[in-house]
Image 1 (tube, helix red, strand yellow):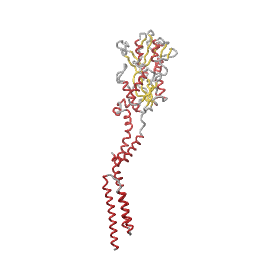
Image 2 (cartoon, helix red, strand yellow):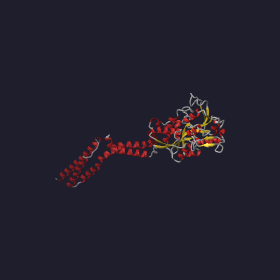
Image 3 (cartoon, helix red, strand yellow):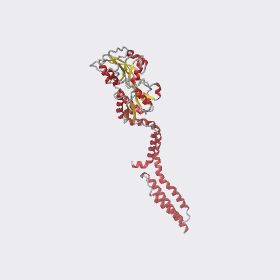
Image 4 (tube, one colour):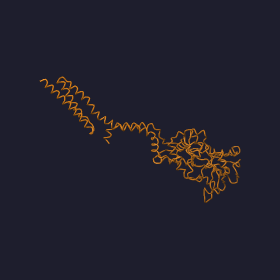
Length: 430
């Protein structure tokens, strides 16, 4: 190894410099810290974000989770650059947002639950006129969907009392009699859903016109909560319940590095691929139930799954190789001739140490042949002796010593030639 380094250090240095320059031209690596707008503490959005936080940590990516008021607030944070990623309820973003945002796909249904007090007869939502209704917190997706559904049924703040409470607070308000009905958006796993369904004083409304809502608004889906899905032994609910449901989708800003898209898609698949009370396994993540365009990375993921590199390498290594491969062909094109030129150039450099002396040797031979006095010839002879001494100090690898000794033999030949000329001149003068 030492011999190789000694011989080819300059080739190695040139190759390393070329590699450094090449990789300096790579696109920037993905960030190690990203921010996700989630939702309120205790909600499904926050729980989902915390799962992603743990999964991304395995890939050495820090996910900072922001507590927010819900989908509307999340959208604002994305557009303002305060978050890189967010969970959005479908129907919140508009076509105008497609210039700045990508969807990575839907991850679960978020049904709209309509609960009301027993005794309040509700054949359809128009029967809630004049009632006190909890419609979700300001800035939440629940509030946006509640406003839409109520408006479709002719209800507003003028003919009903709309209370800005959502989630557990809305459920508690309904149980305590502070409101007559509550429109809530959450997954069936939310604890208060089962509490309300199990309470004999509260009734869950089955959306009789669910299909009509789904036809009118493509981001809504008509779903069925099966008889006994919440509790088979208690038979909760006691019959199939029709619901309408938007989807929760993972949305990213277009400036977010594509490698983060890939690691998020892995987290989405691991977290939501197992199915739920409303869906069969492998329903989510879903590329169709969205209202924003998919990123190119997401499209590729849904078509072919994780990339080959992501299957067999860590996130950091897979990303490095993915960025580096575009330079491999031009880099190899440059490296091959450089490496192939190494041995010939090395031979030239070593032999040059030897052959450079031949110029001096030829000059001394010419001076010796043309010398007209003993003094001049002696001077040339002394120069040849110094030349012989100096060439004896030249260091070359063992494989090149034959060239060195050939040079020294030629010096000796010229010296003997001049000595012979000197003897012939001396003889001529006698």
